[in-house]
Length: 83
Image (tube, rainbow, N blue to C red; front, side):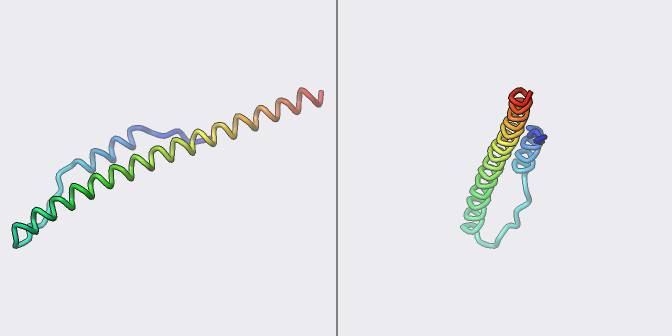
């Protein structure tokens, strides 16, 4: 039986991403702006990864459920046709 996706799992991952992180302050101001941009891009990338993984998990769960349903259908058909 497929394991259902837990939306709380996704929400907690997003909350962890949105928590402020301590960033080391480099000596140059231009480097600080670059690090902030990198951090925001990295955060956006992580959100896209989590979203993609969530969709993939949902597709796998649905695929497993459909496969199980098809197997039950075939088993019933065999019983009906064999009897």
